[in-house]
Length: 77
Image (cartoon, rainbow, N blue to C red; front, top):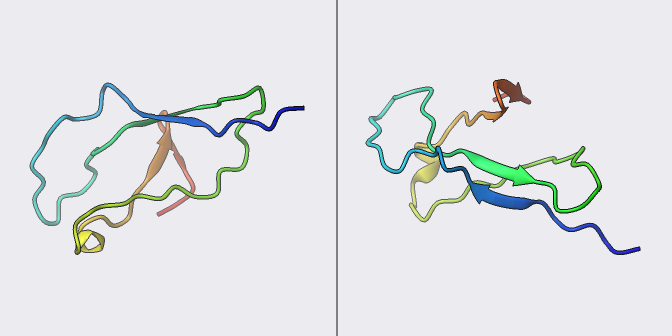
């Protein structure tokens, strides 16, 4: 039996192309990411998503990130 493939990850076409954000701004959609299962096995236990930036102070700006499946928030912030 072949090992299952990892999920396919891509940027959704409805992701905002460019926008200016102000300090303290909340509830801003900055990326829409698609996860598609690469095998017949369901994705049932994704434990984390890593978000990176090349900015040395990104952690000062990217806080309380929420993950949604459609309109349902997954986990908590």
